[in-house]
Each structure stands twice: as C-alpha cells, then as structure tokens.
Length: 219
Ligand SMILES: *[C@@H]1O[C@H](CO)[C@@H](O)[C@H](O)[C@H]1NC(C)=O
Image 1 (cartoon, rainbow, N blue to C red):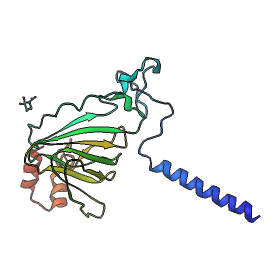
Image 2: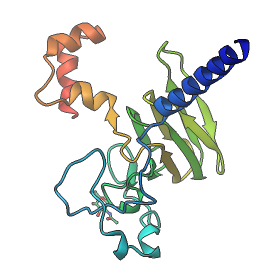
Image 3: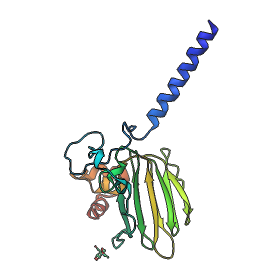
Image 4: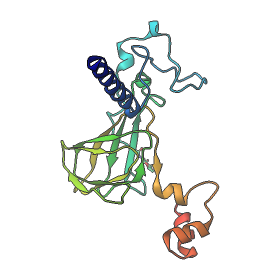
C-alpha cells in the first residue's frame, strides 16, 4: 500500500513538473522536424503555413540579413534589422526563436519597450551599451555592457539600450519566440490611434495638458 502511494506521489510530481515546463515555454512545441514558412500564404494559423518539405534544401536554413548595418540616421540614432520567421527568415517558423541586429549611432537609443511573448538575450558585438530593465515592483536593473557581453531581459519587462561608446555600436538580440511582439512605451501612450484622451495622460503623469499635447506631437 505504501509503495502504491509512493508511486502515485512520484507520478503526480512528474506530471506537475512536466506541465509547468510546458506552461513556461514561450511558443508551442514543433510537431515536425521543420516547417519553413510559406510567406506568400494568406492562411493564418498559430504560426505560419509550411512550404512543401520536399522542396526545402540546406540554403533555406541560412540567413544573411545581418551582414549590413542598419541605417541609424534617425531621431533616436538606432536601427533594428529583423531576422524573424514571418518577415525574412522563414526557416525559424515553429522553432520558437527570433533574432534582430541592433545598430546604434554614437549616443543612439533603442527606446524603452517590452516584448510581451519573449525573453531577450542581447550579445554585444561592438561598442559599449548602458542597458537595463524595470521589474513589476519598479526596481531598475541597470548595467554597462562591453564587446562580448551578454545580458538577459526577462519576458515582458520594460527595457532599453543606450550607446555610450565613442562611436557606433552593434548587438544581436535573440528571442525565445518566433513572434516576440514589440510595444514601445512612449509610442503606445502618446502615439496610440485613435489617441488616448489628454485627460487620462494629464492625470497619469501629473503634467499639464499643454505638455501632453507637446509630447503627442512627437509621435
Ligand atoms: C539613411 O536614412 C536617411 C534618412 O532617412 C537617408 O537620408 C539616407 O540616405 C539613408 N542612408 C542610406 C545609406 O541608406
């Protein structure tokens, strides 16, 4: 009897462990070896439709989109080059991964934002970055990254990167989702369409309506 009870307890613990690791996964598990996306298909599923696997070759898995720096001649002095299943890297479909090349001019900023569906790991290829994220208790976790360093931005938390090098910087970001989602904090609040009523932002930020309208003009 004790042995049977023990077996039940072990089975129960294993079941809880198995189901919790499933829940923690960012994307659904693949059910095929691969599913190179057919980017011309208009069919929407939880992911992307696959091309005929018989037509897939080694080159389908190769990606060359990060060879060139992005154009950082813009107000923030930064550029994001995508490496995502649904954009330009169809072999990532169903693999639970996404990538981006991030370029920063001197003083360039990737503004505060979140990825609701992915944890991000950033690898600094060149330059020096001041980075950090804010947790749900509003504790801030800043640090400085140099060439060769990695940093993890936990899933869904607000984060940014600022280039503090005396020249351009670049980094590669990896995500544990093929579609991490991106929400820029300032754009979401001050650039939403249709616009959020000024009164909401006046109260939320404790600033006069004239300032709300000035900030809104920037988006
Ligand atoms: C970079 O972007 C700026 C602003 O849009 C543009 O004027 C410039 O020609 C671009 N440079 C390159 C190399 O594409």
